[in-house]
Image (cartoon, rainbow, N blue to C red):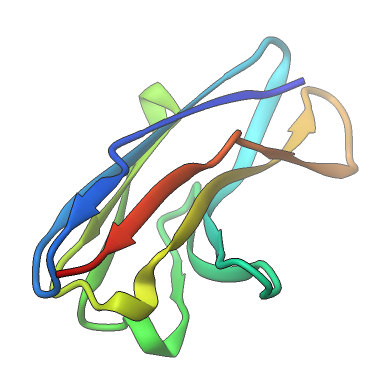
Length: 121
């Protein structure tokens, strides 16, 4: 199993910045990708950004140019730098990891507990 610990959420004004961090830990696993989803009240959880162990990134259109996802494979950690935040970015942000057991072939997903991001004046 993979345990994910998130940090960095908070309250900021529109146009402000936050940096979310997520550290993954586990024994006998190989992480294929990590990233962030978010969920606002009454809405479905949606992908924000993901990065593979090889460095390939995917961002949803609404955050392109504003958010940057970086990784540290040695520490199994990712950081989501969020700039030019907008009220519509307000949501609970969940870290996710896609992984396989060492020697295994099937991928599984793990989720963090979520961290609140609120953008409001």
